[in-house]
Amino acid sequence: MNLILLLYFEFFKIGAFAVGGGLATIPFLEELIDKYHWITHEDLINIIAIAESTPGAVGVNAATFMGYQTAGIFGGILAVLGLITPSIIIIVIVAQIFHKFKTNAYVQAAFYGIRPVAAGIIGAAGISVAIIAFGLKGVFLGNPIEPIYATLFKVLLGVVFFYLIEKFKKHAVVYIILGALVGIFIL
Image (cartoon, rainbow, N blue to C red; front, side, top):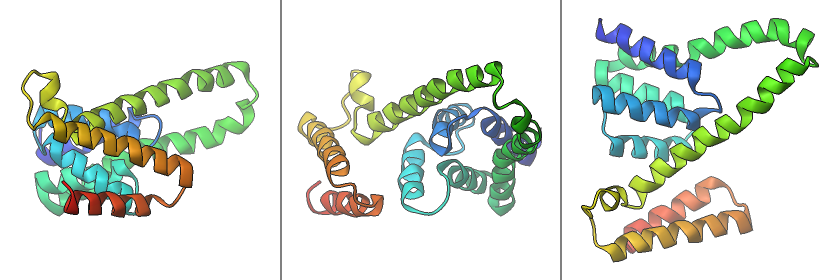
């Protein structure tokens, strides 16, 4: 299959099945990385970090980057179009029928079941990101990739930032800047 069409259809599948927003695309993006090697897992972590600190959805930013890396500007455009096409189709269809059926017990039950699944997908993606971000990928494989004290420091840093975020509720950019400064001056 033509690479451009492959990009479009792979991202179309992600757009169709990643229920729960941009972060829910991460497991699907990891699957693409394993299957096609368009970027590395570390590239994906960097994309997520940048995407969380810039306007736009994680999935759209990742699609743009992966498409561009794979097939240039046209690849980036088609990857994004592939990602958003299912949402556009679904929204148009749902908007037409949802108003009629929003009180239907089956519709309510379906949403009741979808919400925890979306939370589980996002949670699994968070764990995947944490494993790489904290340097634990090699640890789980029995091949540490950095000294244990560095890994423990990063885990502690993650816990401290989680506490700060929950306690002070400042804008995410504040914590991203603080994290970058810690990385520059301490790590």
